[in-house]
Length: 483
Image (cartoon, rainbow, N blue to C red; front, side, top):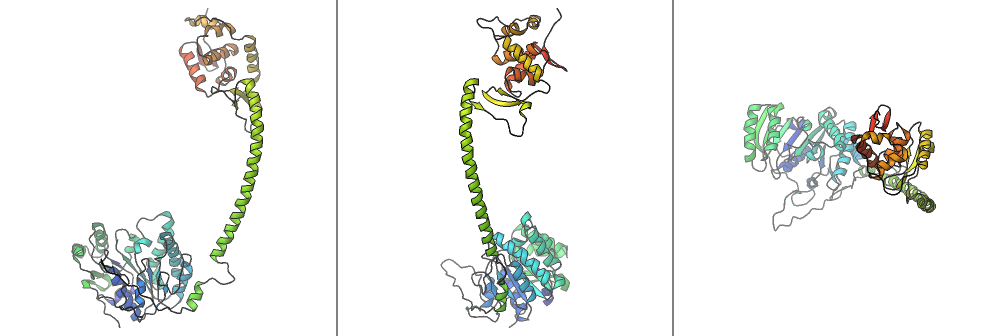
């Protein structure tokens, strides 16, 4: 039995879109078109993310229907599938005369997209005979906003609707959210079936499509969309000069997508299994080929072996590190007692010890600091003079206010003159007095300060502000006045 359609037959010879809010009859209309296409002997394939198109196989009372088409995947599968079989099933659909339903409801969102990326590519590449392809919930597979990992899927879906017609593929998209389906796909629909739609953004998406064909009629249609009853639609087939408000008939097969009401228990239907024979065999990998599961198991075994080896190497390295740490601790304790520091930071192995000097930092940590270029002999001589002129003991005079008097002080006298300052400042002045014109690195080495420490920087700054030091192109020196 072939139910008469309220739209021109010509519409099904091209791509189309069925748009409608939840409960408007969108999926039911798609089922009516599927029944019609199967009745006239046209090859069809349904992409079913929801898992309710299997009802095409049963009558309203659950008995086998006249449509013996296989269901791949889902709870009512004649042949189970997984998300790695997209390319294989795409080639099967493209090269066989059999119609089918592909149920993706058991896949995760990522698995569904992975399957469809490979399926769409294989279908496009291999198909050469007429095929009506129904894609339910198309916005899930081709959204307007696309993440990077979805780019290839969107490209393959666009190929099916843009160029698929040359290969016999007529894609019909079903969605309850025309606002979020990718407009590159929606704009390729040659027939629009617009059912009840109340959301302003979704109505605008329909209006935009209609504006491209007839702006005046688009306004009339948009204003009527929210008033449509279940199963009613505005059908627009520009190629047939057809625009009418129509009522689609009920489909004849099992209502597998009916929403249960409160207090009602909706029964399930068991499909009579089909013997897929060669189709089922085509989905299975050849015996001589390594299956994906076997490959993954082999990869996991190699990874486990590598991890075990790395664990052994790590444990060995930790044991050696513990041994060296024990030795280093003993050395540090011994050296620390001698130099007054309990912590020593070692010089990195790839650095030359001749370029560095070990100093006690402000935090009492011995660490390496770069030696100033060309300062070795000068610093050594100055260090000898400092040893020959130790800090005075006993009461020390206050810092003279006259810069000239300070400038006249040398060696131990200058050190005694600034005895009231903090030790870092006294060491800075002593270093400059003993070396003449010098650099920050030389001062740091003589004074036992880090070149980057705040004690050194702030000390030099205060001494310059007080007129005790001056900074010139030659370096840092004591302020001297003419006598």
